[in-house]
Image (cartoon, rainbow, N blue to C red; front, side, top):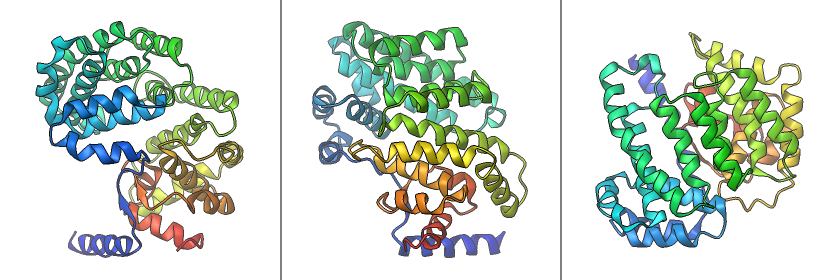
Length: 332
């Protein structure tokens, strides 16, 4: 145990020297400039950014960021729910959903105790009201329906009702990137679906997506979700590595990821979460043995990585694992 802690500290120090860290790698200068003031309580500044977002993906990013990083503003937001402002109601509902999931944690259901589940459901339940009001006040907005997908998963509401949220979202924006990412979760075996449904959705999305479409990243995301279950019961670091590489280098997997990555690379890189998407593809391709593609995609991806990326699942020390991969690919 002591030796493991020492080795972990050494690994973290090496990653830090290489500039590798956990963090959010999104690109939105206006959001970055406003976020400190919003965190400090300037709700009106946050609402202005939500209302003036120039693209649906920037709107979703801003909503997700405000909801996740400003949960301490939940009470102040809910005190203003009588304003009938769809942006405010959306933010209030999304903030309550994210705060509730923090109570639950990201643990498997089997590892979440009954008392924690009770508190999670009690806190989450009121989120539906502001989200549905926001949807009613702005009938063209897909974001409330995306957040309601998470609400349904959390509350354990029937699959048929979750499907209705998805259909409502598609009626407004069928290629809503954040909405498709959430739908992939809905179709995972750990929620309402199966491996077959999840992969069918990811592959259909990839087949229909235009070159450069961020929705192409649903394919490596689906493989990441599948690998997470494959790793259940792995007893050693070596066992984890073997299982990861065996899956990604398996028949057809590397080929379909390479084809999707080549089409994704035809985009202009302007999506606000382009760097996170690059790590999604880059990690999958690296473990698949597609070294040239992995290096090409990871070179401009930056060195901030999400805690839920494939690097985190495939490596005992994720940051050191990324450092070794970058060095192996000649990027360090």
